[in-house]
Length: 97
Image (cartoon, rainbow, N blue to C red; front, side, top):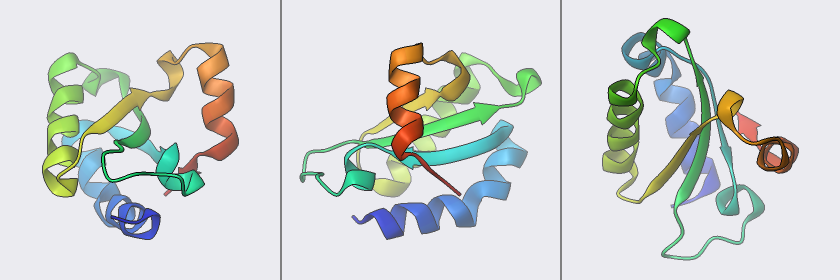
């Protein structure tokens, strides 16, 4: 798994994720962006969703779809709900598609 592969996948499926889950923004951050990932590393993805689509079931359905596609654990977060310290760190390295 590479950063380029993940970003390409997210970019190719962005419209589908909007239609199915209300995802308005999606980006990759963490070890895959920094290039210090290991075989057991998860994939860190931040999203924003339309309020009318925001629910636990929708969130976990997207998480499952991403994990099935990548065959790796995905750490999925909603950017607007992140704590300020975490958000500041993530925003420094995130790559949006």
